[in-house]
Every structure is written in C-alpha cells, then in structure tokens.
Amino acid sequence: MMNIKAENLSKNYKKKNSPDVEVLKNIQIEIPSGLKIALTGPSGVGKSTLIHILGLMDRPTSGKVYIDDIDCFSENDKYLCDMRKKNIGFVFQFHYLMPDFNVLENILIPVWDDKNAKFEQAQDILKKVGLLNRQNHFPNELSGGEQQRAALARALINDPKIIFADEPTGNLDRTAGLEIEKLLFTNAQEAGSTLILVTHNEYLAAKADKIIKMTND
Ligand SMILES: Nc1ncnc2c1ncn2[C@@H]1O[C@H](COP(=O)(O)OP(=O)(O)OP(=O)(O)O)[C@@H](O)[C@H]1O
Ligand SMILES: [Mg+2]
Image 1 (cartoon, helix red, strand yellow):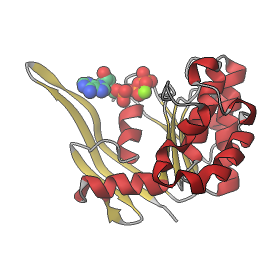
Image 2 (cartoon, helix red, strand yellow):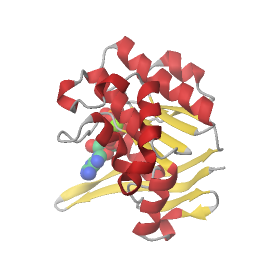
Image 3 (tube, helix red, strand yellow):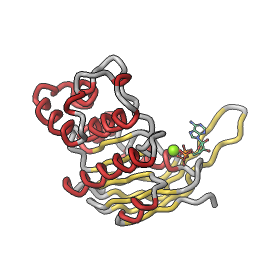
C-alpha cells in the first residue's frame, strides 16, 4: 500500500532581482494506493512542479507530502532518495536516456548496484515494451517512440508502487504517443500500482479513475 496525501502544498520559485514565481498554492490531494490519475491543465500551470514534489524529487516551499502517513519532507535527502529508489518510477517528457549506454544498460541504471540480479527482469520488461531485439542499441539508434519506450522500461525496473509520467509522449505522433500511454495504463493495472499521468489525451483521461484539472486561479 502506498497512499499519497498532499497538504497545503505551495511552491514559489525565487530568483534574485526578480519577483517570486508563485506556482502552487495550498494544494490538497489524496491519492489512494492503486488509483490511476490523469493530471491535466494549461501549460505553465504547475503540473511538472507538482509531480516532481509528489515524486520526492523537489521540496515544496511549504506544506507536506505524506506517503503512507510518513511526512516525507521532514526526512533527510537520503530518506527521499531511498524512497524514490524503492517505490517510485518516473517517466519524463523527454527521455533523458544516457547516450553512451545501450538500451539494456540504461534500463538497469536505477538498480545498478544490483544489476546482475535484475538482468532477467530487464529482459522481461524490454519484451513487454517491444524492445527486446534492440537492447544492444544506443539511444541515438532508436526512433523517438522507441526511446520513450526505453525510458518507460527504465521507470519500471524497480517495480515501483507509484509511477509518475510527465507527458511521456514527448513529441511523438498521436499513434506512438497513445501506445506509450496505453502501456503505462496496462502496466499499472497489472501491477496494481498507482499511476499519475500528465496527459492531454482525452481518450486516456477518460480511462483514468480520476481526472485532476489544474487551473490558473
Ligand atoms: N526553476 C524555475 N525557476 C523559476 N520558475 C520556474 C522554474 N521551474 C518552473 N518555473 C515556472 O513555474 C511555472 C510552472 O511550471 P511547470 O513546468 O510546473 O508547468 P507545467 O504545467 O508542467 O507546464 P507544461 O505543460 O508547459 O509542461 C511556469 O510558469 C514556469 O515558468
Ligand atoms: Mg510540464
């Protein structure tokens, strides 16, 4: 079980000689374990900021995030890092694969200390995303859609109980993008994991258990 709860979450970006950018203001969210959420809203509203905080990659200016009743940001960075490693998968809008590592190695990066034990699982995941035959290729030898699928595979290697995906369709065409998002849904369904997907795809948003719409007011 991995229930997520955010209380009074605010985030301001500060920069010297510039006014603060007030992005999130007193956000309240409860995401019960296993729920599939579609997160939507206009560009700049704070979707990425919000999921970076919920995914423990960035600290809020104020407010709390509880995962299974633990107040995560009252803990130190090592706790946050361990929590991410153990329980959280993240798919970015642009894949951020390592160019000098082949597909298989890229997927093993989050579990590098344990990579030999994870080898078979990596192959299973590659099969699931349809990239088994490309495991020895480097990212620049893959199409955009294949790169996104590799990034998705990398997010699944630690069997995350919570998966965040930030418009994981990158700049793919509609069909390739839909394919990636469908894979995310199917995987969350099968694994019983929580999915928080930033998407503009109405078809998929409609398939989510809940839609969270962020607005600019
Ligand atoms: N490091 C930063 N410093 C200052 N402002 C920032 C920083 N990161 C993000 N912002 C601002 O915070 C606001 C929210 O950004 P965010 O990336 O969360 O939006 P978004 O909803 O994900 O948008 P998009 O749909 O375009 O990805 C934007 O106005 C952005 O310019
Ligand atoms: Mg964004």
